[in-house]
Length: 331
Image (cartoon, rainbow, N blue to C red):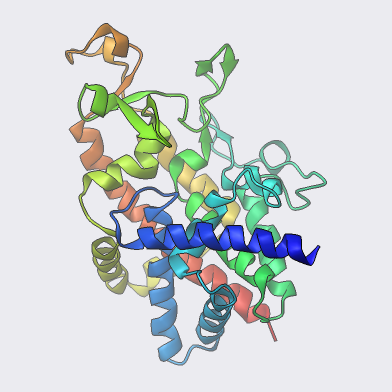
């Protein structure tokens, strides 16, 4: 048993090491760059508050960095993307559905009974809201002790707070039919041509395979990549915005709970996300093979990169506050 655990540990360490090497590369996705940016922004806020004498902030800083120190190759950045690395793999398969909450596009309210069902492997609910509640309990159960369980909890908390601020992690369009079934899986089933109609604009290479670009990935990464900024530039720019926030705005953002954050993000999806038209319904020149692709134009990019940045800032402020709430409950 100990040998098996050591083997699993070595595998995870190798994965984390590979991911940490990406931290200096351009932002790649809410599943990568976006999560790293949110984590770094949150911990910058925590550091400033700790240095100003805030007890809870000091404890958060201690818990986070001591937990990371239990893994010799882990970093804050790699911890923030770890849940995507292990998604679909043992022993973390129980958390596969915890990266999203599928609120129907036509509805405005989160319904835990319908969208976050309690099950044996998800006693707090099988969605991102329940996942956050689960790992909050895990982190509290460690009592401030740095161990693998604390590192897992920190990683998943950072990640799920980020996911709850990506609009297509909180919305499902059941009027969209894919392979005869309703649902667009958070935009994953909506093929897009991003900014131009070409092989490069309409398809991508992932893990050596060519596939269609889609609306979900547009929000996850393509709009961020289009800015040309790397993680450092993004963090510095958005941290300047955080430093300029007034106390009333920050206090308003910190009200509510993850369920309310999901509803708010879902509202953003309803208003802004689904506006691209099918190419066959536009005057944009294109080959017929792209008739059923949605066209994401420059106006969409310019409007929604503002929303992306707003969500990254808001997620980081709420992540810092959420971690401080946990710290406050510890003796």
